Length: 409
Image 1 (cartoon, rainbow, N blue to C red):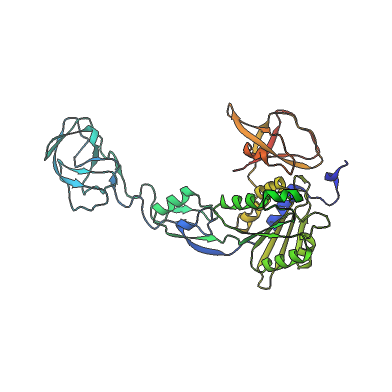
Image 2 (cartoon, rainbow, N blue to C red):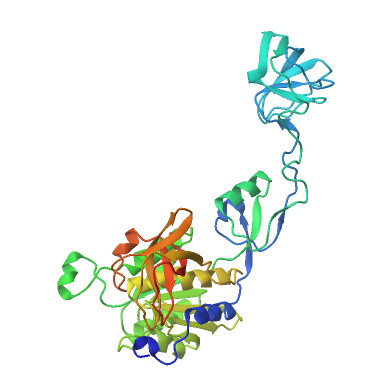
């Protein structure tokens, strides 16, 4: 098979991902306040120190009642007081008595059931009547019915979503042990970046990679430092050497191919980095570069070099950067690919392709459709794309075949 995809030395996408997982050392842990831990991965199991609910409480606005059996319609009770949510009360019920109560309030001693206010008729300030039959123990939330003391709430390795944080907060968890998030530096290489429209006259272009990467990290509630460097060996070497001493990950765009001004790889190797892989049999993003440096304290700095074309950067972020960041936080697993039905034919290519597509359900079947303008310098179809779909190398696909993909946000 001819073409650039047949170049010797290329590894497959899955081989590249496996190498990232194999050669990445998990970072240390740190203790964070729960409200600062969104999207972080737990470094330990979390157990409850309390019962939920903390006490038996009313599930509705209504009346707490003490009765010796189920209550028949038209039964009357003596009203002896009121309990609001968040207020304590020493009231104790006796048979035939009731107390006004509100949702979440602690039910008084000897309560046998709660009557929601819709089925209660207030006769006067001291008497109420039940207007429907009422079972024993109705609308009572029992102490510990959701969570009991010592119960496992969250597992080590679980990512803390908004819902997880809310759940742990309700159980009284105020701080959690999580894997440290890597300190990330982003290096945008190239002399061609325009600062204004006037720069176009000199052949420059606006930078999409910097805003793309910064927004990608912000979408994960993370901040990164972004650096721009000119295409000279001395400038690249000075910056990489400086960052390798202070950061866990250096993410670069451009400068990883074989051009006269592609200095990232040779400079990195000269600085003592170990090459893990270079060049992946994929499109876009063939000249992907991954290396690591072991520092004097046995910690590591990793460098992931992405090609300069923005579509290749986007693919690299969604697949490789995401995998690497997760691995640094103890999540050593490949991306979670989905399966879907292709809605049209696709021609063969010598390299595995990642196509920007639109995924939607059709009669409960997930289907994907390719979008136009897939070239590596084009990004406009990201306005419609919601997934990246893997197209295997060396084979054409027909409508109706099953493909793998990754949802993008």
